[in-house]
Image (cartoon, rainbow, N blue to C red):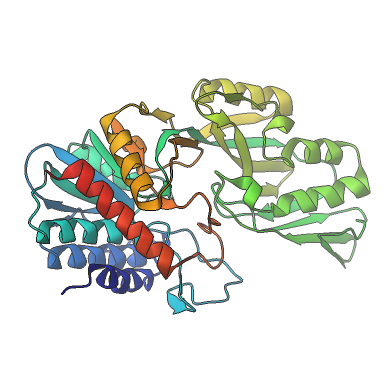
Length: 427
C-alpha cells in the first residue's frame, strides 16, 4: 500500500535542497536559478502524480486536476535568505524526529502535503467537485511578481486557500505596507546599515559615528581612528510577529542615545517599538486586532537616513492615512513601495466553516477563525483564506534559523489538509 505521507516527506526534502532565495534572473526564472530549479522540481512531482502541469516561464507553476469551477490552492517555492546560526542543514535534514530546513513550513512542506492529500483522495475513488488548481509561485517573499504575472495571463480562482500562515483558519489579514522613510540623519552619524528585507526583524546592525560610544549591554563598540563602530546582533523573525524577534537596530540606537542623547533619544523612541506608537500609528480594531511595525532595513549615507518600515495595519484604516501620520511625526519623506490591501472573508462562509470543521475534527479542538498580520496568497482570491501550517500551541520558526517541524506534527498537518480538502472539495 502506498505511503502517501512518506512520499510527501521525501519530495519535500528534495524541494528544500534547492536554495530558492531570489537571485539574478536567468533562463530558468526571472527570480534566479534556485527558484527556477525548485519550481521545475515541484512541477515534476505534480506531473508524476497525474496533474496537468504548466510552467509560466519560471514565474510560477500550475498543477490541475478535475473539472468545473476552479478551486485554488496557492503557495510558493521561494524562501527568505537562509541566514546564520543554524544548528542543522538549512537545505534539509531530519534529526531526532524533526525536519529542519528553509521552507519546511514556509511553504514547500505544506504545498507538497496538499498535493499528496489530493492524490490520495483521488486514489480512494472520490470525485472532486471542482477543478483543483495548485499555483506554486516563485516570488512571494520578494514582491508577488509571480501573482501579477498570473493575473495578466490567466483568471484567478474565486475561492480557495493558501497553506502559508496559521491554523485553525485565517479569515482576516491586515493591510501590509512597506513604507520608505527618508529623513535627515542625526549629527555625527557617518553610516548605518542593517537588514535585508522589510518583512524580517533585523538580525544585524552596524553604525559608524564621530563621537565616543558607551559600552552597553547588547552592543560591541570598537574604534577606528576618530570614528566609533557600534555593532549588534538580534534575532530574526517574521515581521508580522515582530515580538518573536529581537531587532538589532534597537540595540544600536539605544547605545547611541545613551552616549549622545538629544536627537538620538528621539530616534530611539520613534523606532524602538513594534506597536507603531513611536511614529504615531498605534491602533487596533475589533476584527483585525492591533497594528504592528518593524524597521526591517536601515541605511545612512550622505547625511540621509533611509528606512523600510513594515506595517501590518487594521482593516479599518487606509495605508495613505498611515503614511501621513508617520510623515507628520518624523518630519520625513514617506512613500509606499510595496503593499497588499486588507482581506476579509466572513466567518460564516461555507469555505471557512468547512476548513475550520476539518481542523477541529482532527485535533479535537473547538477553535474559531483568527486574524493575522501576515500577507498570504489568500489575498489574491476574492473568497480565499489562509489555512495552516502553523499550529497555535507550537513555536513558529518561519523566517528564523532552524526552521523546523516534528515528523509527528507534519503528519498531523497532512491529516488536517487531507480532511479539509475532502470536506470542501470532494463529493
